[in-house]
Length: 345
Ligand SMILES: NC(=O)c1ccc[n+]([C@@H]2O[C@H](COP(=O)([O-])OP(=O)(O)OC[C@H]3O[C@@H](n4cnc5c(N)ncnc54)[C@H](OP(=O)(O)O)[C@@H]3O)[C@@H](O)[C@H]2O)c1
Image 1 (cartoon, rainbow, N blue to C red):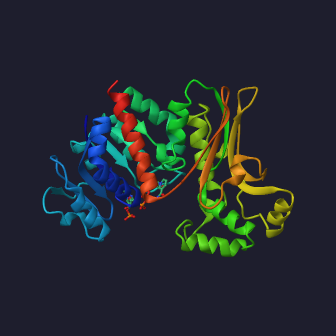
Image 2 (image 1 turned 30 degrees about the horizontal axis):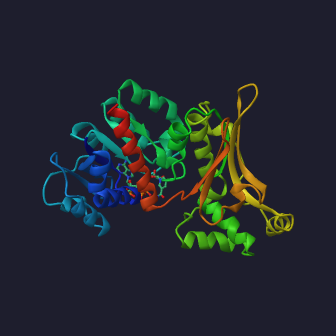
């Protein structure tokens, strides 16, 4: 199968995915009969380039890495904006990797709707649209006979959504709990070693885990978005951001951490949701003192983990990266391969 893709947004994740498809082109052809050609790239600041016959992605990647405008590419059509790239190119698959805004979902929500309604598949790592309207977008994709994949929105390339939807399929999943934010897990790990919250946060910022404004991470907003996505998609229950009780890690003191350690426990920021007997759902993000026997208690540093409660297997836990250029780029590859098998059925 030949896939013509267009990138909307060409930052870290887009470049990570480009590296993967450049390196793994022959493997993907051999293992999955998948030939991926990039026909367009459109980025708000880097510029845009379109060639219906396919772009030389080594050249495009080199321009982006050297902070040169994409318009320096020697051939092709320049200057198409995101929506023109989505609707007016011969791309059949749109890779939506612009920035995340979980409050409005924009501009990605508009991009994704335009693509699905134009009969194009969408692969995206953008949490915003999935938090706001995952069910509606999946339904729009179904109506238009196209695929919407968003594996990278939870645990980046660690396959949380696909694990639940495909591999664990046949189980009834009644709930989940997880370490859904790497930055806060890194900070709690350092605090347990005796470092103050302030120093641990500074270190997380130096390492590029935390933003200059760390509110989204430390107040649990990022984890909350993932709880909403997992609840809607995996548990099949409608839930919005305001339905989730939320508490971050800023209230955890060194004394709390020490006290937990003395009692064989460990603080973790846990995002969870569980279907109740009356079939409602209870969801929260808050610091929890876990016994060391809990698999999540052994997950340290900036690593993520997620336990699904299943009827056939009991708890099933996955542990892996929750961010990173190649790691999140890989999530797009998971979606691409799944898309291939879904649409060639
Ligand atoms: N990086 C990770 O580890 C990770 C993990 C999981 C999920 N994600 C999600 O994946 C998405 C991409 O992340 P990233 O790390 O690649 O972000 P990034 O490096 O900031 O890249 C986003 C790119 O999109 C461009 N952009 C913004 N608005 C646009 C628009 N309207 N049209 C076209 N381009 C636009 C940005 O341009 P300017 O910056 O020049 O404005 C930037 O080049 C985000 O939604 C992020 O939340 C990332």
